Length: 284
Ligand SMILES: Cc1cc2nc3c(=O)[nH]c(=O)nc-3n(C[C@H](O)[C@H](O)[C@H](O)COP(=O)(O)OP(=O)(O)OC[C@H]3O[C@@H](n4cnc5c(N)ncnc54)[C@H](O)[C@@H]3O)c2cc1C
Image 1: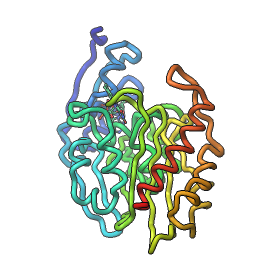
Image 2 (image 1 turned 60 degrees about the vertical axis):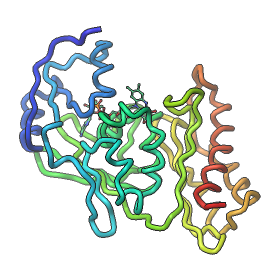
Image 3 (image 1 turned 180 degrees about the horizontal axis):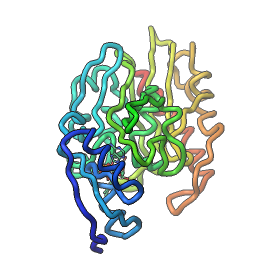
Image 4 (image 1 turned 180 degrees about the vertical axis):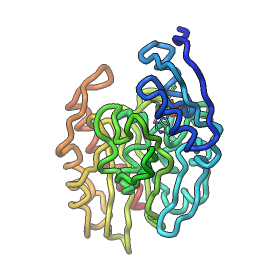
C-alpha cells in the first residue's frame, strides 16, 4: 500500500529537529532507518502530517569512548554498531545481539536508536541494553535528560521518550573482559525471536562473580532475569549450577501466547535458552 501523503523535513541539527517537533506536535513522526516506520505508514496504521527525517544530523551517528562508558549515537546503523571495535571490546553483548538482528539489508538501514525507540518487545536490542544497565539520553525543548534502561521501556511499543523529544544517544557502561552471549530462538533464520536471552558474565577461575541476564519477548517490555542473576553469583560455571539458576528464568515474566508458541512454551524456552546463554558467556 501507499502511505497517506505527508510533508517531509530533513533538519541538520537536533535543535532544528526539536523545533520541527514543537511546531507540529502529535502530527509529526520521526524517521530514522524507516525499517519499522515505513511499514507502519504503508499499512496506514499511522498517518502523520509531517515526517521529520534525522538522517542528515551527523552528530547523532557514531560510537565514542566516554571513559567508563561507551556512547552510541541514536542514528548509528546496526551494521556499524555490530562491527565497531569499541562495542566489541566493552559491550560484547551488543555485538553478539546485533549479529542476530534481521538481515544485512535491514542492519544497513536500521538504527540503534530507532530500534530502541520503537520498543518492540521482540526487538533484539532491548534485553542487551537492559542487562548492561545502559542510560538513554533524551533531548527536548528544555534540554537533555538521562533515563536508566530500567525506566526507559514503559510498555508494548512505549518508551519514556515524550512526543516532543528525541533520543540522541545511549550510554553503555563498560563491561570489559566480561563474557557475552545472545541466544535467540527462531523457527526461520532472520526472524524476530520467539524468545531470546542476553547474558553477560564476569567469571574468575571458573567461578561466576557477577551475571546479568536480559529476556526478549517474555512480556510487554524487555526484562531482567534478576532471580537468575542472584542465583548465579558465586557459583561455579558448571552445567549443574547454571541449570539450577536458569530454572528461575521465567520468574515474574508474563510472556505472550501467539501462533509461534503459548505462554508456557515460552516460559520453558526461557529456562533452556538462559542455561545455554550463561554457559556460553562463561566460556563453559
Ligand atoms: C523484515 C524485517 C525484519 C526485522 N527483524 C528484526 C529482528 O529480527 N530483530 C530486531 O530487533 N529488529 C528487527 N527489525 C526491525 C529493525 O531492527 C529496525 O531497524 C528497527 O525496528 C527500527 O529502526 P529504524 O532505525 O528503522 O527506525 P524507524 O523505523 O525509522 O523508526 C521506528 C520508530 O522509532 C521512532 N524513532 C526513531 N528514531 C527515533 C529517535 N532518535 N528518537 C525518538 N523516536 C525515534 C520513529 O518515529 C518510529 O516510531 C526488522 C525489520 C524488518 C523490516
